[in-house]
Image (cartoon, rainbow, N blue to C red; front, side, top):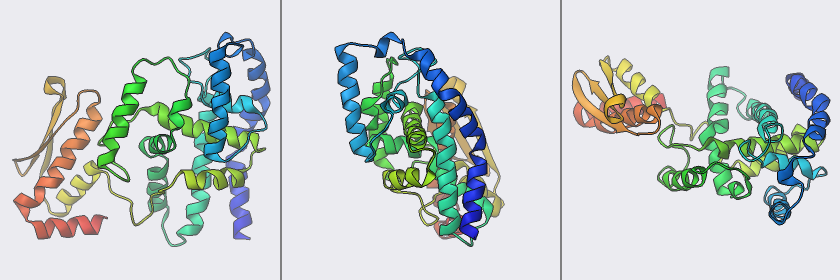
Length: 296
């Protein structure tokens, strides 16, 4: 009975998505059928053949190949009416739904707040971008973004230092996560809106799935919690406009610095992480270790 209730709730959650998708999908497709980029040409033919490799990677054969074509077309490549953005929207909703269902039964004693954090860790941009890189899905993305390839290379190199998740310490090309979600959306629609098929296909692709045991606290959150529990005064100094940096002071003592020129948030996160690495040297290893254990 409980399983049936979850299925019913899942169906209700998807009503808006299904209404938008089923009612307007064919209409949108018809308005884009004359797009020149996909009408003819050797490059297009080669690329469409390459999409057969995507089917091999995800172990799913599409009944409607145009869905897969759409899932790997960036808005920069073609007309706005033909890109992965709509499928990404669907895939985002479906992924949240299937993970909610899975974790509900996997962790029967976990409260809603903890379940939410666990789900968020498995659907955020970095986690999904790692999936794209691991399975080399980015090789099939059509786009006209001149810096994207270099950003993907930098991301692929940076995550080597963080086997599971960096928790905000590396810059993530959003397009990587987008194509994972758009592929999920494409499979969902092609399979006649089956969340069971979606989960069967993507469960293995999403590995390693972050569990309650491997879930880590975001460095900024962890630093605030450690300082609050020890009654320590924490201060972030925003120097990003001046030299792309944040400084951290605890009890008026310099505790760490983080720098990153492209995104202010990453510099902030790195400063918190640096402070966490240094705090035990100043305030005692044993006490701080105890605080970390209680948080995690």
